[in-house]
Length: 177
Image (cartoon, rainbow, N blue to C red):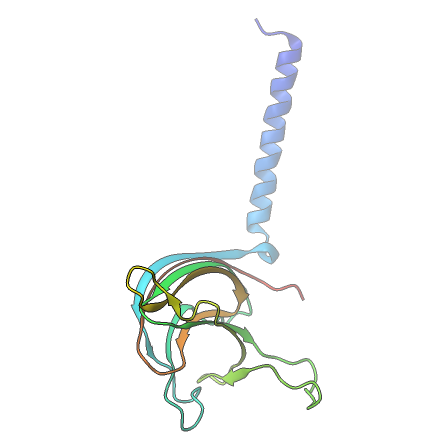
């Protein structure tokens, strides 16, 4: 049959596995550690940005929201890989809620008021703009980046429409307070 030491090792392994499963169940059900995963692969054509976020007298920007602005204060963290038909910028939006009044000496970060009156600070990534493609010599935007913020937007300030194909893998997490 089996030696006593083999039986003891087997019982210990079963107990460890049982405890691991209980711990995993506790972590999943813990609301403070809740996460929402979002994985998507799409090809989308841009649309004009709302006139309320376009500076007066300027051509409406063209945009594609790859990840929507969160209404629950959670923050997206992930990776996106994309290719676009024309040179574009990538923007990461951050809810803008200064803890105190910003003075003129320090200045304010670039920000905008959205149609729903939310104010967002904007990180504009331009490192992928005007990447010449060797096959056609046509300037495009293509690349991959890690990001963290409240929304992920493909953007073109000139108002020229574009098409973007992207794959995004992100997790929405509650911020530490």
